[in-house]
Image: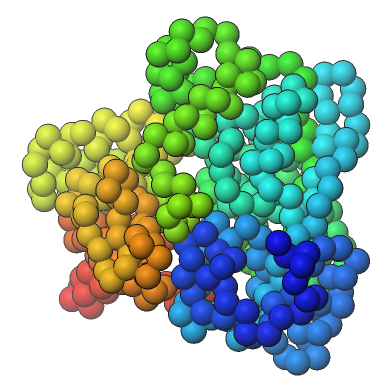
Length: 375
């Protein structure tokens, strides 16, 4: 689609380039199909004192209704090259503009293990290191060898190691300390030629049991993951505007978890408090317990809400949807703020918004601001 567009567009609506399908226009919109043009695009912006925002598949972005008063660079580069193959592992360099799920499907077809549980995730290859995308027991950082990027501060190309990327749970240097400093152009992955698959996740194990699949192949696992993702709890972005999970899961130390249990016991039914406590104890991320944000939202009673054309998905309160295509970005943010307020009021936890918010200042919830003003 993008190849048929002029090189540079003015006042281009960003609704059509984001999966939530809300937001205003970009003052300028540039389709980058060759990394050699990166410097030209940035020079164009610099000469006009324009801010720059880099857009991939638009599957993790909430653009405000006022749009973006600068240059949006849409990464649309292509290419997938085997850098090395020692018979046990293969290193593959992939252009940032490639579809992530298309690359996963290609890896499965080639017999390469390591990212099969990340099937069905929308977006581009260049976006996955930013958030350290993970699902069903796998994280993309486990396979990344290097990230090639343009360093906007140094005005030069650079290669970042996994250590440079500072990967953590759903984060990296690209969305924390060095946000907007790097423009990712290529990612190199090291995948295994032999493997037994990552079967630790409860939902994966249950699906395999139901299908009597004891020694799953790569294709078995991809088929299972796609089935899990299409069971109705995650709406298809092609049919319903959304960004998947709108809030991040909550990471707690053991002390935090015990304090939360006592806090919840004072504010909700003991059964609900105990259920959340036991749920968090089932999932570990590094040295932390992971409390699913959807379960927390549900326990706090923030279910079935809507604001204008924005609503919570009927089967997953963690997902906010552009219900009939009429939602504004303001509708989505109002709904998100209501949910955050409710959770903080009932659980004392400040939910973090997962998508990148363009044109928004994310403030503490109203309930938290009120409580802090009284202390």
